[in-house]
Length: 389
Length: 90
Image (cartoon, rainbow over all chains, first blue to last red; front, side):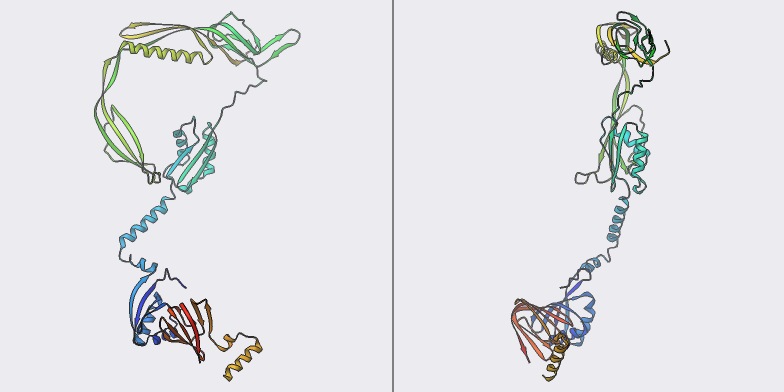
């Protein structure tokens, strides 16, 4: 059987003295009837096509029958219900157009695979390449972006730009730095990077110019890459090795007892909207001197998913006044000692060690002064270009 | 009857379908619930227990219960319901 879902069909009741004549007339006129049911001896119910209804009325008039419309079904009748609801139709059309247009723009960018590089840095570089929230997607060439990113960021070894609809997935693989390549053809010396007393020498290549127990000064050559061997002439090599020496440090750290603290006076909350990368402030400009600001980015989520490129920015602003105050001497001292130890460890390197440490305190012009005397053992050799014998 | 016989012989000689040449009704009955008639000439009577359909030189009487005409068009009639019998009236 035919199903007139779009064209529509009408259920009618036909009443008359001679129903059979009516039916035969329909057959003769080529009007098809469906699901004819007898109601009583003088009336039937049937379905007809919407387009045949006018012909049916003519036939009924000729055969002295009466037609009563019972029901109308079909998509066309549903659509006809919106005939006078202009605003609803316009809204639906506008929504459809807005959805269609918005699919051409970037709504979300996600960077996957970052370890040591910050996402902000990658997003910044992507921004320069035109990949940003609100960008017109047909203008983005993923291959070009990929090449440009690899050229601009040495830290990356591989990148993939996958654009899935309005969402861009950026997969990155960071570059693993290989060991320094030693050019064996080059000639290099080892010189002292600091003053010290040599305690241990591990020479892999080159000729040692100094011995254990000798005192060296900064810049003095420790291992020579070019040296003469009796009977064999001059030999050239890339000097390698480690030279450990006792080194001494005498440093001073000073900190004033006076510091400035914040006195919070007023707290205010203000909002802004980030719409596809465009920030719209929902507040007037305020004086930002001495303001602590806490910013929360709240993405709009639908069913737990970030489907829209809209983010609410909530800024909690705290007005404050800086006022001077006297700090506790013990806490300043502890802070300085901690700082001095950190500084010392950073100077002697990871393989160095502190043999002796003396920390003394004194007050100088209202400030706390920490004197650090340390004796360490550390590697002092560094490679430099050879300057001849 | 003579005319029918001539047509029958003619269709036999030319090996043509008899219903096409003679314009006779073609009735397809599916079990006892569906009946399909082609080459009809109209409806003589219609009720849920009896449907009488006019065809060439005959009236086809369909007896049954809760019958309805599922489709009625110029070329065919499709009847649904509990069909008890089909009788030809000459």
